[in-house]
Image: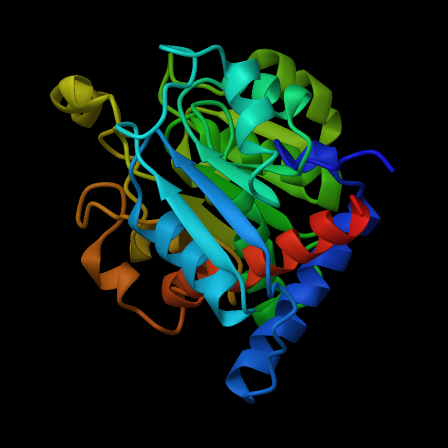
Length: 304
């Protein structure tokens, strides 16, 4: 059987993605009710980090431990992906020693090349282009609070970055409308926008994007590695903060999400972030744990 990887949301069919979401919800309930089974006993997750992250490391490590498995953390000091050793050689060696691999790195081409030569499933835990694991958690969170996301309207406010790209893929796979607002020059990948077709609207007006949205979501204005652009970006993104005033243009029961970490009072107001009637960011963060457990179960079963 072919090895299944998760390098973007497009690697799973819409039915498979919904299967993972439903399993994540069930696994979340099982944890809370104390009925988790050690289904990962004897399994090892190799975690390759070329970019640091609190949520990604904790959620993957905790997920493996809760299900009886082990996680091996490899920092940039521990690996030589594409530097001292070709990526394909690292993939061949590491995949003979672990059962599944997650990689958080820079270019999408790194995870794609690693997966090409890996004997075990590979998960993209973030690249400069995509962040598909976060979208599993985000969709799970929406489903828990509002039901199916199919046919709904989502507003993305901010940078046309890896999270925005992943929301575009989500609109294609889960079949919802996505209204994107970015400053001029910060729009998402044009080819990806074209693929989404009628599901997508791209504007430079945040209020227009928020209009009627069932969910409004954002991310930091300057991502990791863009710190030197912080001052310039703050000027360009003026007026793109998500706050109660912007949320007033969304649907009456609209939710707010943020993948975190948040820069309070920059891309989101502190008041909105802490408004539990609208903001579901803490559920969203927790759901990284459950969505990734479900994803690993799916990939290991589908590849066996």
